[in-house]
Image (cartoon, rainbow, N blue to C red; front, top):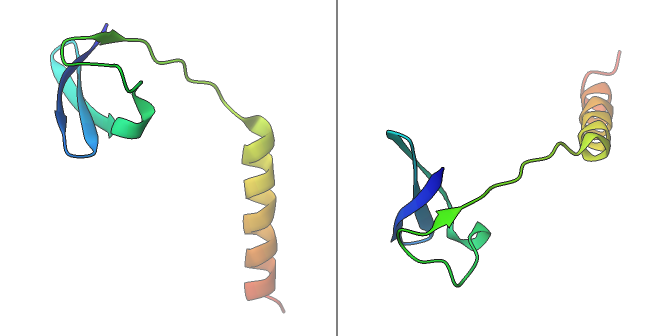
Amino acid sequence: MLIIDRFEEDWAVIEFGRKTFNIPKVLIPPEARERDVINIHITLDREATDTRAGAIKRLADELFED
């Protein structure tokens, strides 16, 4: 269970069990308030990962040409 503990400037402080962590406030629905329970759904974007890896490889190849 993820609970919004408080907001600090541009961050939402989230409780997860006995731990807390911050996430950017812009990722929280604007109507969310302290003590609200939130759900986070995380997915992997394999296409974006592959695109990014290709771009990094091209840059490295340019930088380290023989």
